[in-house]
Length: 252
Image 1 (cartoon, rainbow, N blue to C red):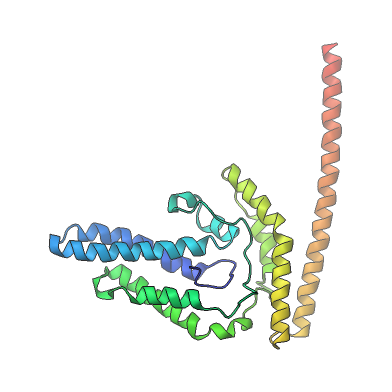
Image 2: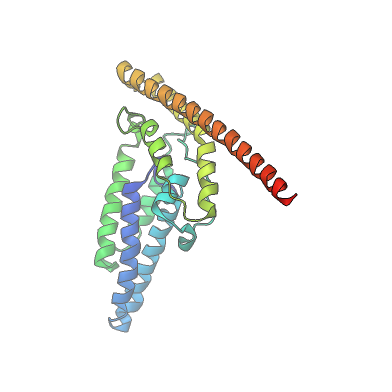
């Protein structure tokens, strides 16, 4: 149940839900020290709430491969084993659909807040306020954009790729998947910006021109790096050829 439209890093939601995960573990230790009749009821509600927030956390943190990699080093430890290795997408087919948010809020309201631990009650209130705000203003989604001159995705993405950490083989595979997905990601973003433009929400011309120039420079730099890589590859091939020839001479 994704409770947000495509966002690059779901920091706010992840913080709330991560806090709730920790709260769930803490509350389980606490209720074990209470009398048995209280434990059975409270523990059940605490566990159900933890499972609820666990599910939201898993769904949202796996919304794009870079968010997942940034937040969790070992997603399998959180039950996340099947996820798309993309940069994420805007929902262009039904962008005003808020059913996920409504369903999530309905499930949240089904919990007895007073039966939750103090930590979980805080998480409950934060999540409730977040969902209610998203639902109230979901028709204003076109005011949102991932493009800006200072912190836009066209600025952040090269930095994120440059700072990407490699701890195991799967990190390399997922990094390559993310890089290969860049074109389709920006094509989806362009379609979203076209939708904003048609509704009169596009950015000012001067800002658009600056962002286009940033993308052009980034593209030129990318081509230069490709040329450098090709040059290095050719030199490495020559070095390997010379080494093989040298070894053959030594063997003879």
